[in-house]
Image (cartoon, rainbow, N blue to C red; front, side):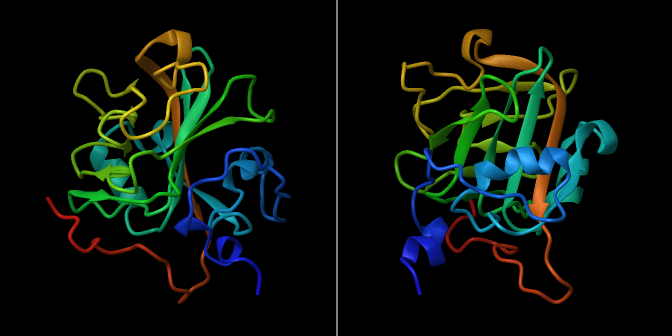
Length: 214
């Protein structure tokens, strides 16, 4: 049967040093490059689909939630204006009910040397609570401040990051996902990937979390 961490990987903290994952047959080049991030998640061997692209679907919260809500866990991939690729994995997904959704398996990531190289992953800290703020008026929000894309009026491409309270800092103490760029950057791309489920197959985490409503 295997160890419980293999059968139920998202009941454990994210793995940060194992990237031995093979692409699945349906992966395109970008999905194959991102696949190692998903080691020991529920999406490790499941086909992926691009559900939201801000450049295609619009840089606003309504369009974001229209595309991502009730599809299960999702991988957020951001590209900054100068080309840094970073983001986070939200195991519980989004439903747009104004909840704080918790998961100890959530993580943030950054490709310091470019996609296709090994990323750095940062685990959730302080227990599972507030892994994601699932608020209908904003985009992805890992913790209250760890990686937030609010789609603010006049600055819809602005993202901000402050590490330490909800997700761990880098080993050298750096306290923003964007490194020397500081705590706020402009994005040129924002995408979300979800797992592919067969018609009628159960998709987990597609309703309200008990006791999670504000």
